[in-house]
Length: 467
Ligand SMILES: N[C@@H](CCOP(=O)(O)O)C(=O)O
Image 1 (cartoon, rainbow, N blue to C red):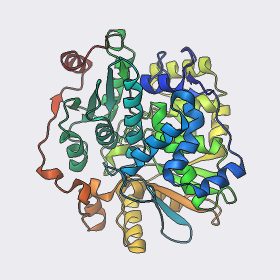
Image 2 (image 1 turned 90 degrees about the horizontal axis):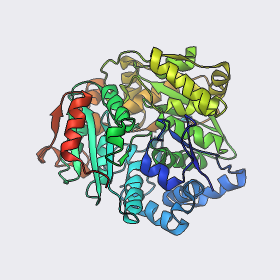
Image 3 (image 1 turned 120 degrees about the horizontal axis):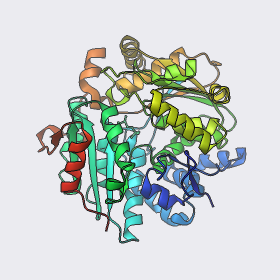
Image 4 (image 1 turned 180 degrees about the vertical axis):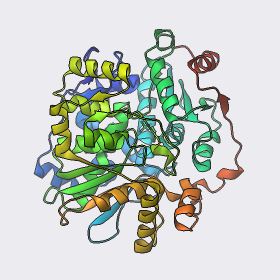
């Protein structure tokens, strides 16, 4: 059975249930499976006959093991993906002979995060039902994770969620999707600072014995392995529909925290013929620079029309460094300590070589994003969101055999970023029926300074201790 090990090598291996409920490993590392199951060409071809929920169960079961029996996992997937308003759950849209969009935004909060967080909510609810524990979910969001997590976890018994977003730096739709959920277990905190301020505060809490010892903390950001696992599924689902295993497919992924594209890497390592994974960044380009130069050196973040990607420190890059560094927890732990001390770290030749075999990267600025957005609109009559346009622009510029189809992950519905879409295209997307009365709903949110003291004070006043 698959066990979960920490990238930092100093935490005991655990099963899927424990890894999911913990979020982050106790040594500060990120959980990864101790081995990846391999799918043969025949296994992959057999996925063609399955719908989305059945594909999800088939891909995830080896990772989940007996933490959830097969029939139950399938039922959870049917419930989670039954909440999407497209029969294909994640439909593929063709733009031209080569370019495709994989629409991941048909869930309750109109972003790809729903694919994982609808299921994660159900998994946490099930795991809690079989225990006498209370969980405190603590998360940081630049807009999409927060709304998807809140919609996945609102109302769950014995679970509270504290979601930090950078005040004034998320779109009005993103904010309201969070702050209009008034369930008593939901706490929205608007902090002074940017997403990295919020993410650093959250990570610090996990390493603080005073806090982590008092509350059973868990994470719903992509540092939680279960988030990524659910995202591996749509790479298989899309590639099979485009001819895998007989034809390789490339993916272009707009990314900030490296979670979504790392899920594609996992799919490739499991045997899916992925010709290339394109890391598409906006001008906050730490990932592009790391891939180009081998120097992982976060810099200050500037505000852009693609706020979900306005991130300096990319949490899941640690997972890639672990995988491509020979899965050596001690070496990775030293590398991360150097990173913490110097604020930058050099990749080893082994890491650079491994990464170059699977990934390419493109930095896309605001004008290039707007051009891709307009191109998609002219080509398909469809508005795309600015993050998707970053991915599409990168896909158009990548040097790849033209016979290989390239799928851009359409990570959010354009209505989530109405102002930016209108600025780029002159067209304002309407709000889909799902969120039609969003602007008439009451909001609840607490503004706090972006300091550890302010956050822990709030938590002590509002969270439930573990025992
Ligand atoms: N873009 C994200 C930032 C957090 O990413 P996650 O995938 O680690 O949850 C957001 O929308 O909040």
